Length: 79
Image 1: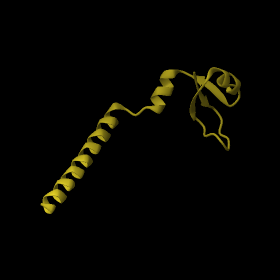
Image 2 (image 1 turned 120 degrees about the vertical axis):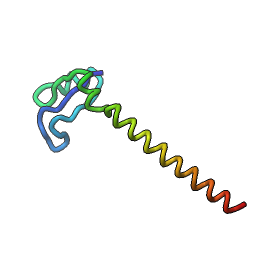
Image 3 (image 1 turned 60 degrees about the vertical axis):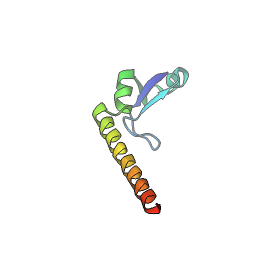
């Protein structure tokens, strides 16, 4: 697998778009519109920073707590 980045804007591709493709496809695409990039650059572009992941995780926990509270309220009203 190779990481490639677009170096020209077209109708189908934005400037700076990064793709991960197999070796044969990458070899055919690299030239005037695409260039090879390092795997590290690909990882940085496709993964969220750890601080954002923690914030997202905390938000989902609080929403699940709210759902549990609502279920408990419904159960207590039935009894």
